[in-house]
Structures are given as C-alpha cells and as structure tokens.
Length: 88
Image 1 (cartoon, rainbow, N blue to C red):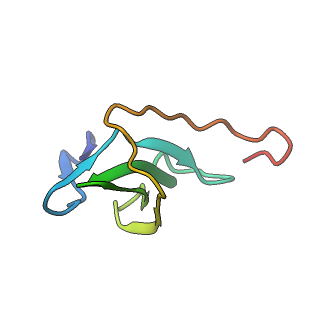
Image 2 (tube, rainbow, N blue to C red):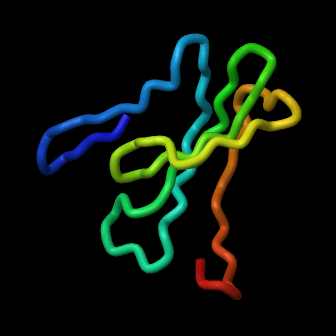
Image 3 (cartoon, rainbow, N blue to C red):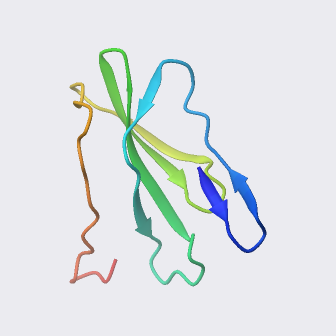
C-alpha cells in the first residue's frame, strides 16, 4: 500500500490469491530525485515456494521476479546497504 499524503490518494499492488508478502525494503535508484524513484523488494510466499519480487516504487508495477530455491520463512527481515564503492 502506498499513501500519497499530498494528493490524499492510495495505490496498492495485488500479489494474488494465497500470496503472503513480507516487509518491503526500499532501494533508491542511483541519482534519484523523487522520493519514490527506486524499487521495493519483498519476499512473496505461495504455499511451499518463495520469490523475491521487485516493484517499481513509483507505481507499484512489477519490475522483476526471482524464484528462490527454498521457501523463506515468514518474518524474514532484510535491509539495503549501498555499496560505497559504486555509490549505489
């Protein structure tokens, strides 16, 4: 769920039936100027399978999906640590 506090609007991404998404981690785009210029990374679990879902933070549209070889347990936490060498 994304809240626009200035325009008072909301938007959401539908993960689909039987999908359970973990907390999203924001990854800013290199040189980003807008507060939502970047991606949201979230682990999504459906039954016994998990994937890393990458959403465009501006409009919550899917940018990429990576199927994981194992199911990631609920409550898994993540964080983004920029690479100081690349400036990302």
